[in-house]
Length: 78
Image 1 (cartoon, rainbow, N blue to C red):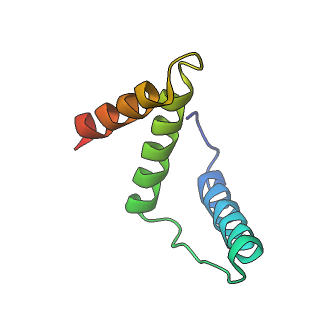
Image 2 (image 1 turned 120 degrees about the vertical axis):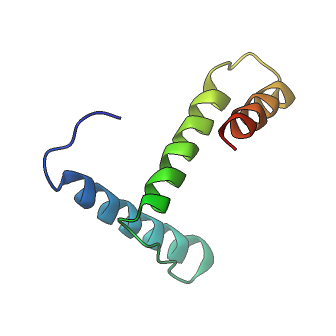
């Protein structure tokens, strides 16, 4: 994902948490806080970005093929 200057990764995750909170409040009427800074959060973010990249890799593939590719990705990481 690139190199962050010292502390920029924490700023990014804090901004991401603020975005999730605002989006949840807009969509569901209640804010939703996420914990920021733990390895678990980072791992979930990296896995989600990986799944999104795999899903978008073949725009001409059927949705079932794209979902299967994401499931294969998840199985390989388990």
